[in-house]
View (cartoon, rainbow, N blue to C red):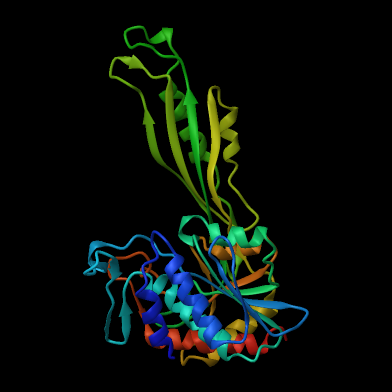
Length: 362
């Protein structure tokens, strides 16, 4: 089976509401095509292991996808939802082609064909698109490879068409600032405490904070901090007793903006709603090995780069795994109405993964 055929098979299986069918397909393929120890945990993650050694390398992906658009689905005669697949100009179009069933297919084939230098693990997680549910579940139950190549997109970062190796990415912390006051009739302003005024004081505090940054891959990985929503008040003639703000913070490895400072303001509370960890690879030898494998698999010259958004590599790195990201998706492809992936680049990824598996641990 080729990477094209396997990608088409995986992408055709709906997995935006329930990943079970896609997980079944991956599990059955691994059991049929390999002699590996294949398991399925109670979250739905599919794991396979082969080879032996003191250190473990994992090829990591996820088989859940975001909701498809109307043009990406059709109804079968029995009423079931099917994903629309199109292939043209060397690219496969369909929900999940880029993010990231194509890279999962490449990793499956590399896992099957590799004669690994150490213990080799394949892992396809559920729930990446909703906060890393599957990765967190696996980590909590002992999934702890020494190294991992995560197949999220790294193509087209240094130059168009080149598959790079990302050694760091930002995280995301989403939080809510709640300002409380005392309601009063708007004709008696001094009888109340205006929660919106307290909230605007919190906004000023956020604007004064310096987003953190760190050095990674020879460049500055810059965090960011922005107020994204505000809601407060009940009527035009009432001094509001409550106002809420949401804050989107892009975090960097080892650093956070000091958002807790807003709680020094009277009547203001701060709550973290989501905290997706950033990632940075601190093992230069591992990063260079993956870079060399990627260079050998293509005519272009890949570079070590950084990514702007969070992936399951963040959860793995937080747990102690040295991670890099290498995958076929290009900036602007994931989650789009015309999501697609280059079949040539998928074959490149398959070759890269196999080369890494056969050379690392060194």
